[in-house]
Image 1 (cartoon, rainbow, N blue to C red):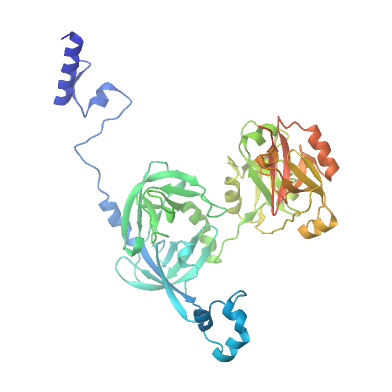
Image 2 (cartoon, one colour; image 1 turned 45 degrees about the vertical axis):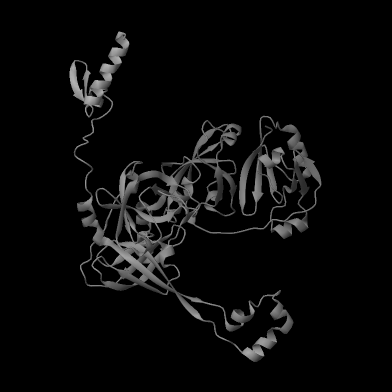
Length: 489
């Protein structure tokens, strides 16, 4: 047996015995990382994991169970026996509604009580409790059960459907335990958190985990900014608190992924803190408004607009008489900062604007034609509007898109004040137009940053543009205006 094999056998014996020789010292497996590397900290395996019992005992009294009752009307006697009264029902069509009214009369609908469970937490000694809006939204009655078993009737003080936050109140002279607010902006991925709630009716259930991600957009609303955690959250946890290891509330447990395990979402507590004063005083939240339609700055758009980074919010449209129009904000501007805060992506801007006091003047930096310009803008109050789109026969075809002039009839049907542009009537499958997400019914307003008035302008602009380098097109679709890049792969 050669020396190499003898050395290998010796090394195995040493490792198996629990000791190793490193740099002239005999070390154990537990201290191996200290001896072998200065970048890895030693872990004490013999002390076990720390207990969270003292922390849980201190915060659990502030968590409450919420049970709601909603009255739902069922079908009337006609519908129970003969089906719905809509056209196409054979019984209804044969006998007619007059027959049922004559012989069965106006039968009342049966009412059913639907009960559901949720969670919440006490935020002050006056009896105010934070929870989710969807927990109490349609409730006819709300019962709050404290950790000591006492129950109270609660009333909704204020709620906000867009962030799914509600403030309810109980009246009691009892000295209530209060949860302390933390700072959700200081959370880091990997921080330990604890969720307490009422999952499946199992009162004051405690689960623990870590922060898995921050700033999650899950399609719940325009102000999505969720904390993702692997602390178990289940139906009934909604509205309950997410605590850090200091015993501070850093989130409101809200949503789960259907069929997923270890994926739960919580609203950052800082979002709720910004809204509390309005919920208490007015029962609702008034939000700031700029009057711009924005879109994401993709790498393709950044390149064609001459931007170094694909950051900011691209202004696709400016509404008439809006704060943005008064501040001389134009299509094609890229908003890169608002009120001193950097806009890294388009999702950041609505949240910042929405939380800004109405009537407040703020500074906003935009990039226009490669130059950074500072604008003063007075934040307005949020408004909503809509528009419809129609589809007409094809007239002109190019790059896989078929367009037509906007006639007075089309403009009237679409409720368009501005008749400039061309309407898309067809898009060929597999074409550059389809790849650019251009659809039938879209209105093309600009090509290459130049306005399009009619089909003739459209044809001329498309001939000048280079599809290999990318052609920037401004599209209006229903109540949305956005830029897209037509490019041949």
